[in-house]
Length: 390
Ligand SMILES: [Zn+2]
Image (cartoon, rainbow, N blue to C red; front, side):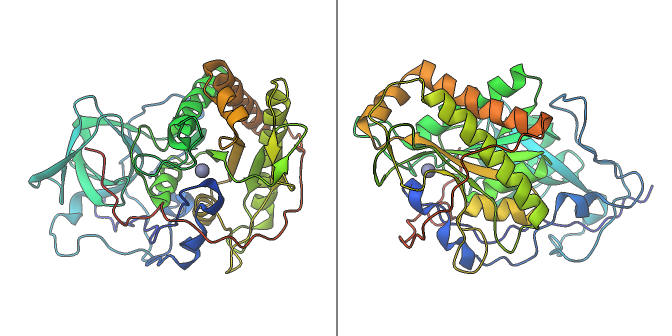
């Protein structure tokens, strides 16, 4: 077996900006400095005969990562660690490394001195294995190595769920003190559970209360080759009152998205919108909304998607949607969102939308043409000041 491979780094490059609030998530990422083209899941695994990395259809999680070669390679990416002599034994790999219960030491090269630690439970995108070490991208986009024994690699998932914001990037904050980061994570976890109960394997991109760049979230998703990626958010800054929930779901648009994939993303957004509004309508609240609430899109200045997680996932061939489920800034809705049963209902609705996307041809509903938006992006979602969870 030819074990010499040229390694491609999944170079997602510059990061998108997430707003401190929902409204500005990822706008400035249009200017992100992508130093190398993102590697699509397909391009990393095609050819080479035997570089089997087909997503499992059995739905089992925690499968061992495939490291058998030879792995086809191209030279479109940036070679890694050119000064090291160890690349002969490095093989391309793909999956999410989940840090084990004792945490994981990190090193700048396989077998090297441990220079730091990562917190138990954190999900890391893996793009290569060398011996007993895995090359990972941290939540703050540091390229490091961890011992494979310090966790487990989940090679695939049908769905990857992203809980927006995290750590000091709280996102929207309700008047009662509930933070969007905390709420999103709770609902994301429940969504994963609801999907699992329906036989759909799902994984979280952000697994705890820590900062994570948008590119890192998408890297975790991309590495797991999901059928869809859904980012969960809660909204702020509504236009006014509405008779029912002001749910908004976004689908992928722009120059990075082939029309066929944009259509899939649109269907996903429409189905999540349909299920979430139907579910939330059963609760009584003084609902607020933007006047263009619905399943919609937002194009950025340079003709690609405004939202970093949608733009980056689209560029990596992953169908995605970003959902603003309800308005956390509205005290009436915040009161609902503090309730576990309401969170569970929301999560169940998101999961039903996803399951219908996977198992039906239903078109979804609630499609609306957004009015032009010009509000500036907030900060966040990038690497500046980002500290990996230790
Ligand atoms: Zn948000």
